[in-house]
Length: 139
Image (cartoon, rainbow, N blue to C red; front, top):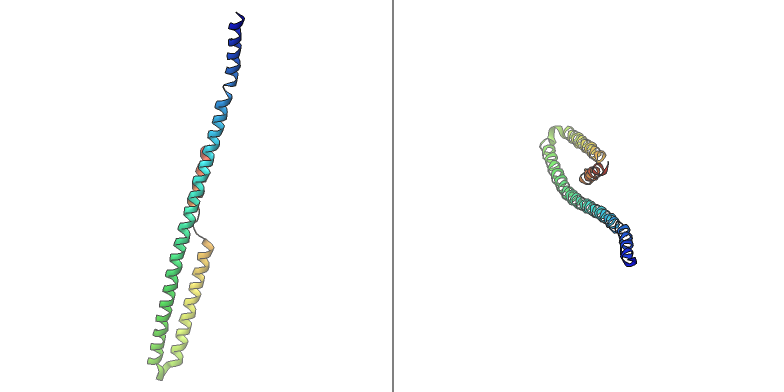
């Protein structure tokens, strides 16, 4: 009968130790899920950076081409009108074109300054997802 009591006591010891592995597994699972969440968010962040760099590159190229072509066109129009008015009002034509070009440059500068002040929407999706994650984790 002493033998019958020993397995019972061993079973009690085994049942006391059994909750530890599921707890450890739960903690590992939670850490694994947290790391996967961080990995997904960092991947999203990387994609957003790549998209923003590509978008800015395209916009920079288009802006440069646009500025060069418009500047050349405006210079030729100014020369054409100045030559047409050479005999009668050449100084007035040159002064008017100078004023127009300087005003357009000032307006473009103001628009550029405003655009730089506003910033871009970089990382909006990542920040929104992180806020949603925080809200889901709050009790």
